[in-house]
Length: 367
Ligand code: ASP
Image (cartoon, rainbow, N blue to C red; front, side):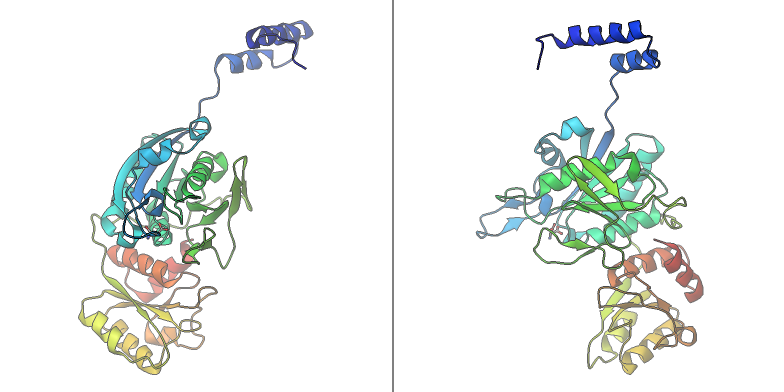
C-alpha cells in the first residue's frame, strides 16, 4: 500500500534509515543513487532485407526488401530506448540475395573500427535471412574482437499484420547489450533463439522459425526479460580469425550441386571460367559420381582448392571415408555447409592458403 510519499521523500527516508543503522555499503548505495548506471550503447548497422521490407502494389503478398531505413526500424521498436542507447547507420539497402563482397568488407571494417575505438558495447546488424548465415560466418572469420556482434532479420516485412522484425530487433539489441554475449563470435538472433555463426542455417522458406543449428542446436535463448546461453563462452578467441584481404572482390569459388546421373560438365566449366576454388555440395557424406570425382581430382592437380561438402543439411564430411582425399588432394568441409565452405575457401585463397593440408587445418580451427 502506498503511503502517499513522493519518490524524493521516500529515497531520503531510506537514506537516513540506513545512516541510523550504520549499514555497510552505504557510501556505495549513495553513489549509485547519484549516478544511475549508464545504458549500454549499441550501434545498429542496417543492410536491408525483409526486416526493412515494405508491401508494394505488385501483389497482395508481394513486398520489396530493404526499403525502410535502419533509423526508422529502430524508432519503430517499443521500449528499445529503455534497453540501450541505440543509434543506426545505413550500410546498404538490399535484399540479402544481392549480398556481396563490398558490403561484407564495409561491415567488417566498420565493426573493426567500432571495437578498436570503443564506440559501442555491441553491434547489431539487420540483414535479410536468405544469406545471413554466410555474412555471419564471413564476419566471424575475419573479426578480431570479443565485442558482441549480433545479426537480426525477419521473415515478414515491416508492413505485415504480424511483422516479426520489431521483436527480433528488440531481442538482438538485448543480446548485444548483454555482457554474457562477449567472446562468442558472431551471433544470429531470430524468434527467441540465439545461434552461432558456424552452426546456423536457414531451414524453412517461409516460417518465422526458420533458423536452425542442426548439429549443435541454438547456443542460447532470449525473451524480453532474459538472455540465456547454454554454455560458458569459450576462453579462446572465436576460431583463428583470418586477415581481412586488402579489398574486394574475394577470389572466385564456385559451388557445384551433386545429383544422380552427374557428369563432369559443371565442374569443368567452373575451372574453365576461372574458379580458384570449387565446393562440391555432394550427395551423402560429400560424395559425387565417378565422373565428378575424376574432374575434381584434375582440378585439384591444376591448383584449384577443392572442398567436399554435403547437400544433406546436417552431419560431418570426414576425410578418407568413401573418397581418398589424401590421394586426390581434397579438403573436407566437416560440418560447414557448402555456402559457408565457399566463404572459408575464398578467405583462405585470398590469404595465400591453397595447399590442401593447410586449408584442412583452417576448416578444423574456425568455429
Ligand atoms: N529475400 C529476403 C532477404 O534475404 C528474405 C528475408 O530477409 O527473409 O533479404
